[in-house]
Image (cartoon, rainbow, N blue to C red):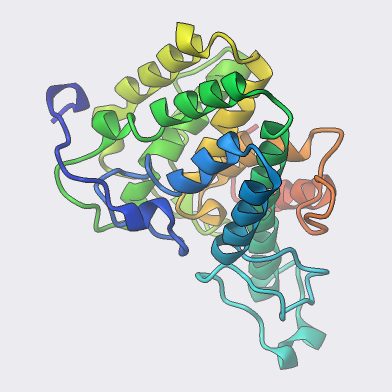
Amino acid sequence: MPAANHIVEHEHNHACETATLADCHCFCHGAGHQNDLIVRAVSCNDSDHYNGLLSDLERVLGGFHASQSDITTHSRGSRSVPEEYELAQLRTGVGKGASWLETLIVDEGLHAAFVEIAAASMEVDTQARSAQRAFVERITTLAIDVIGSDVDAINIVDSHVWCSIVSEYLDELVSGHANHDYSEICYPRKTHAQRPAPLTDVRQDGLQLLRTAYGSEAASSLSPERKLQIIRLVGAATCPDLWRHPAAVRFCLYPFAENSDWPTSQTTQIATLENFKTLRTRWRIRRHWLP
């Protein structure tokens, strides 16, 4: 049933908002995933809120590793951490070693993006923070009414609906062209990919919601660049597993690494632009990073 013809009446699964694993078994199809953290990042107004957010980000996304050989720093709960005996022979260009390094890049990249947004939020006034929060809620919580279903998702792929739509919109916004489905969910070094089945019915409605939110009077006080950064954070953070969603990494997360001041001080030594470029090269081999 098309999204415009139904209203989701379920109460949102709040465990989804603070999800610690790469899953989103909730009817929101990703729109509410980690929403709590996103709202707190754009609303951050003092050191107490900032430090509290940092603590929860580390709990959810893992810490910042000193190197790819650092297996003692906390990692995201869904990740397979190498054993100490494996480190000497671990090759980060293939197999398990490559998967380990790539998951560190995307997890720490998202973590650092959160920190960047939160730090910037403390530098603006109360009115700007309120506008940022309202903008986020419009493209997360309110989006559930547009792309959510009447039943909880049981397939993790179906939870990639919203981040697929956000990725497509970001390409449209930045490049000026649109109408490309960015919903392939896959292991990056394999050719087979799946697509979230519910996307077809809600794709156009979701894109229109983003266009309307971006151009709304309520968001007019925010600069285009600020809105772009917030949408990117929403796309990356609402993605249940960035490592399996190349388009979300490309359009939502990779642009953070292209900023001249990346990475934010005292954050990642792994999710550097150089490492993102290496990841991009690898994923292009199986055509998971489109030109």
